[in-house]
Length: 373
Ligand SMILES: NC(=O)c1ccc[n+]([C@@H]2O[C@H](COP(=O)([O-])OP(=O)(O)OC[C@H]3O[C@@H](n4cnc5c(N)ncnc54)[C@H](OP(=O)(O)O)[C@@H]3O)[C@@H](O)[C@H]2O)c1
Image (cartoon, rainbow, N blue to C red; front, top):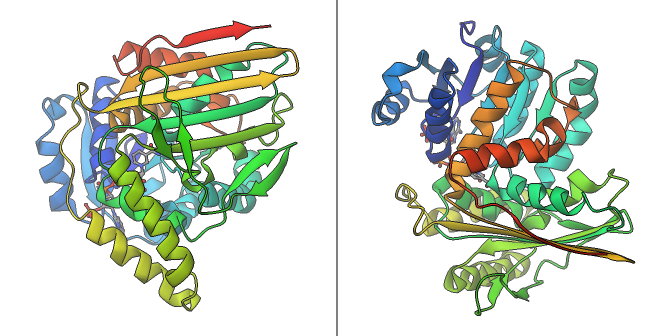
């Protein structure tokens, strides 16, 4: 089957995929909602109020390059929600390239970003197509805050904190545990340096008195996005969820992975990690509530003679993610990205533009910016 709609949302039955469809409806962009189980996708979409007002179709597809290419042909943008992306992403990126589509996903997996850059970055650039893994609250909102800091010349070091309140979905939990197997990097004088996996931070959280427990959280996407940015030499990120109990659980798991899983034969490690992740989250978290599910992105940017602090308070990090994906698709249907090949959300669409999108849907406050030069 060849697509008759300009956008394909793959993994539309999931928590985030459904939100992408909801926001595509608000932008009035026709789409195909695709996945491995047609009945399940239909059931999920039928619970979206007003979904009948947007032109869309539900399609079941096998997870292999040939079937996905066949589906994507005729479309312009693929929004991939099937993670962990290091595990399920390659077929989708290959298929999108073969079909001549821009590729977007929501990864927070640094190893997937590096893999995608190395394997397909040049091919997408040569084809004039955008390869943008990681268009999501984690870490686009923090990237917006970092870019606001970088509007002040003279800063070269980014100290980033990303926190959110809520409980991860099934695939998010699988993803968080999958990252534990990888090496994670930060940037020091423009070189990647490996994090010690058991590193923890007690962080001062802007806007509250209580400190929080944060982790390198897999290294995050920021060091990769800022690696070739001449304004930035150093970039370190701490992240996680606000709930200290959940974070202590992750700390224990990291230790367990170091001591008991990384010592297993390579072909047994994935299954062991997936089993632990499955025991943590097997169901679907409730729909987000802005009074409960808050987000915080804070960036201290420093240089020899400049200091800037930018804080973005927001809510509903999965809704932020769904909206960013839908806006990116809407934008790509009208004009090319600012950069082809591997590019972050801000590099492809502009940080002030993405901030405006999040602000206009009530998902983030006006950034608090303090500048000293
Ligand atoms: N960085 C961020 O801020 C951020 C935010 C949101 C999400 N994410 C990432 O986005 C991904 C999706 O998250 P989610 O919240 O939507 O998870 P989810 O609710 O568990 O949904 C996962 C989706 O993937 C599909 N899927 C799973 N295994 C598959 C397979 N083998 N073949 C084909 N389809 C498969 C599921 O289909 P079925 O319904 O048929 O099972 C479902 O549509 C995760 O990797 C998560 O980490 C990141």
